[in-house]
Amino acid sequence: MNTGLRITTFAAALAATFGAAYGVGQGVDPVVADSPPKHEDEHTRPAREQAEGDGHGGHDTPPAGGLQVSEGGYTLDLDTPRVTAGNQADLRFTVRDADGRAVTAYQREHDKELHLIVASRDLVTYRHLHPTRAADGTWSIPLDLPRAGGYRVFADFTPAGKGAQNLTLGADLAASGPYQARSLPPASTTDRVDGYEVKLSGAPQPGRESELKLKVSRDGRPVTDLQPYLGAYGHLVALRSGDLAYLHVHPNGEPGDGTTRPGPDISFTATAPSSGAYRLFLDFKHDGKVHTAAFTVRAGGAAAGPGTPEGHAEDGHGH
Image 1 (cartoon, rainbow, N blue to C red):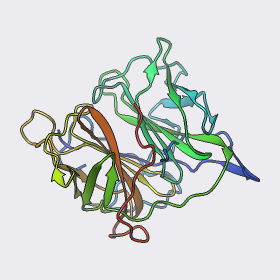
Image 2 (image 1 turned 180 degrees about the vertical axis):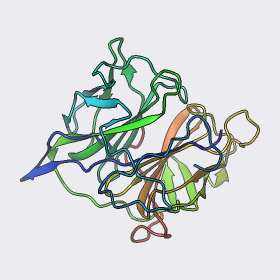
Image 3 (image 1 turned 45 degrees about the horizontal axis):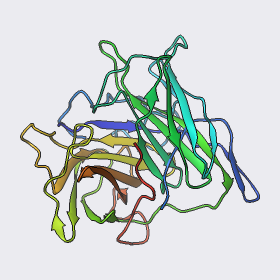
Image 4 (image 1 turned 90 degrees about the horizontal axis):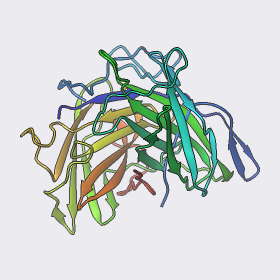
């Protein structure tokens, strides 16, 4: 599969801390979890206009869009703006068109009509979810967030219809409860998750394409029989620290096209919208289970913080 590149920038969550309790006001959605190239395809995103006042972009860098809860005539209507940390609740939302009507027809991309990413503002918690759509257009999925704080919700979809463009809309989500601030995980190019070791080579570069390679091994041996997950051997999401600009990349090549070997290397091509620290999350499937590895890197530099070999995403994957 040719690499599909998706870049979206989102507004900061409105939050207030009262003593040991955390609460967030109305806004755009987030989420997180504790414990591409010149090859263009139908998944490649059109360039978006630079958001006013963003300040991250340059003439040679891709515009960082997606701060809006609304874009291209569509709006993410989050019915569940806050939850309680540690308690399961149904996250519910609707995508509405320019007339306010619920969207009920979507194009399927990577086996799903809509992909939902939930990440915490500190980029420690991460979930890649696939909610269920009711006939009236309401999407829902059970969600249990481990810690109080601000989260971001990203709805990645393409409406049905000729010429429809892929969109990623964002909104803020608050998890209430005793709150403790946490820092961005330190720089990492190796993660150990569920008995696997995943190593990252390369880093995204601002304003130009760069190759990212990820190698999966287990018990000291390369894994050469990765299984397709949602139509690809791996899915990579990058979130920029601070504003959570969103970059979604798919591997170079796809299962069955003769260009990609199913492991141990998964190759991506990506362009960062700006310099800065990014958190990368890789979903891969082996032995019938999906695993998520996480890394902290700096676009335009080798390190994003004090050196450490590990950058595991806590409670990293949901379906």
